[in-house]
Length: 360
Length: 277
Image (cartoon, rainbow over all chains, first blue to last red; front, side):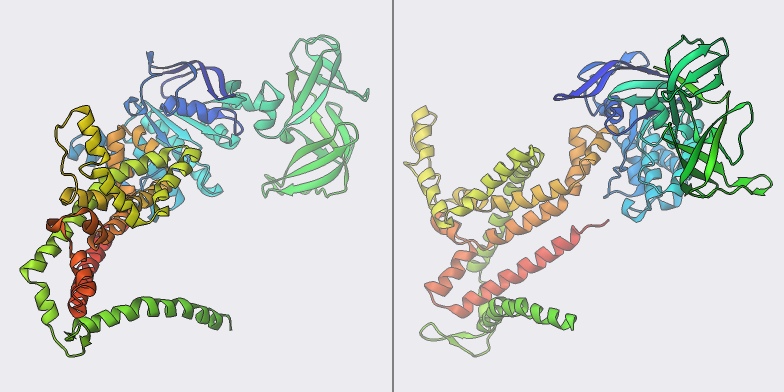
């Protein structure tokens, strides 16, 4: 178990990490997510021991390790650029930590080979890092760290340098390896997709502070703030004030005096300012006036972005700016017969039960 | 058309190399197999005697001593130069450029004058002896000049920048996260230096050794000014053959031999320490 207690880190006048407190349990796949400059890498470097916190404590299994140098911590790191030793072979790279610990030659050999098998690089053991592809180098970096059986493995943007296809593959591989070894993984990324696919829990950081901490799906479905909602996936925002409310049925009025009904089990006060957040996949396009249980805006298709499996339409509305709508190009029965084009006038519709409320 | 133009431009450096490097070398090669003329000139009669004479114990001893001096001064230069280079390389950018400037600064003064200044420093009435006498550590001045010590000191002093600069370059090229990776894997500073930094800066070290060893080996100014007769080097003898004795063929033969030995040693060394990855 790793505990960060009121951790602060400043570089001169710049505050990188601001009073951060966190507890990460053993065996967890934990992600620090945020835009660049949010303090996630500084946090990781303090856990590794490369940087000393300005104030605050780091506890590993209840023991204060704040002043323990990195070579005495049972924590290993997979670096963003892998930092493989160019003059050593794959085998020697992976054996590096074990040799330092003066483990017997036979055991080193067994453990290195076993770990190289785990990352499917056994037959490359005599290669130098420069002879390997990016994905292979990444796996060597992983093997070099996990072979030491650390308490915690830190990964700094581990998939950042890989291409899309390889990244998807490595996401699955990393999850599998983590489950197999049972080591606590803490990884840093600015890529929300990586965070959502791999992590058990995610902490979204902004300006050195925790913006939201929770399970991946929870953060996606119920973001606490507009920042989190925008950072993770895409989101449409409709802001207004409550003009009528009971337990489940509420009316939201927009600045242009139009209003919509929505239903959610929540208490509101009259005149409370709220924002209704809707994912693009919660909206649908229609040429005809929608059903009674739906809300709708009229709009004009400005752009279509084709992704293959789906397309995203950007629709200009009169009072609510541009909204984005996800459109499935395939239905179970085949290619979606409905066609929309740039310049079409359409209705954007969504269920009255849909959406997530952000209270200011 | 374009390729032809490039070839024409390449002609210039080739011409330069030929006139100032290959041609003099060929002249020396021809001299070394010729006889000495009666009045110091060169008689173009083929002979091997110049080479045979070079192995006379008198001269052979000088070869050995020169190699020994060059070896010792290279070793000392490396032991002093590496830490200095390491310190400079890890300094902040601003201080770093000042320090590199200071390393190069002595080049602004003539080498001869700088070596003469060591006479002032090391002489019986020099700064060092004056200071030691004043503090009372010694009661009579030490003989710091005109011996092996002063020659090696002069050699080290003269070539130190050539060791420092290539090592700084190789340290600067090294990815610093490798050092973090090493400590992350449990290595302390000493092990990190020994297992990561040193092997990865070996190219700079080899370059430094080559840059330092060759000029040290052929030195004649330093032993001439700071050395006694017992610390003469092969460079002094060769200079003598050309200037005083006027036996150009013998001087050429010894130069060729020296060059041959150095070339073999250096090419072997470079190949041995070539990048293997």
